[in-house]
Image (tube, rainbow, N blue to C red; front, side, top):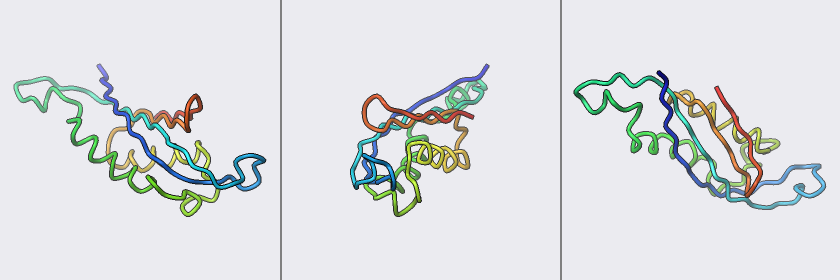
Amino acid sequence: MKTRLGMTFYIDYAHKLPGHPLCGRDHGHTAKVLIEIEGDVKGGPNYKDNMLMDFAEMKRICKIVLDEIDHRNLNELFTMPTSEIIANWIYHQLIERIPVAEVVFFEGNGKWCKITS
């Protein structure tokens, strides 16, 4: 049976979307990022066998990736830093490190992009 674990993170960033009528100007956001991993729990006498991943380890790995874009002007990293581009980037950076099932990137309140495996 598959098990999922999730954590919530917050990052702040600036960007602009060249050519967009409103977002073509420099502006900033606080983004909420939900990250879920998925896998099998083996079960057994060792506590590690009963965990998909220790939350502390998941947090450490996710922070390594998110720190690359936190408090940054994302136009320095991406030509067009839309929610879709940012969420995809987070997903692809994490999938090399942990078994990511889903990344949900909230750009402010009420707007999000979801990437699933």
